[in-house]
Image (cartoon, rainbow, N blue to C red):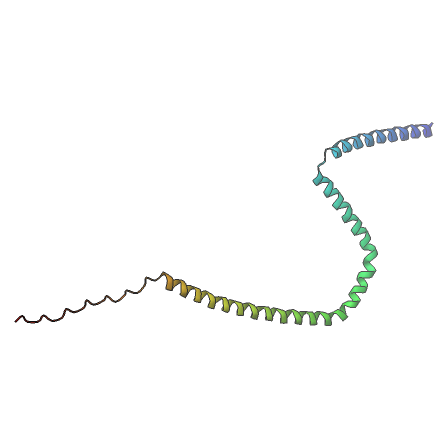
Length: 138
């Protein structure tokens, strides 16, 4: 008799659980049908994130190998940083040269514009011709 009540309780529990899961699935499916593209993109990105995290566990040995190689790459890093510093200095020098050249060109253009805008210098007035001295009349 005790086993029969446990069996009945189990069947009722499984029946209720199945009814509950069907109701939840119905609600979820109705909600999913109304999703827009943004929500689907979020779900896809979350799934991709989970896949990356799961695959990261297999990559730990590769990461450890890369950490061991880090000592050898310090020399490469030093050479690369020196090359970057040289490139930066060359670019700074080139930019300074271009600025000074541009400044000179602007000064020349401004001088030409000022010369055009200035009123022309007054022309010297022609002096009237002197009348010949009057001859005395005889």
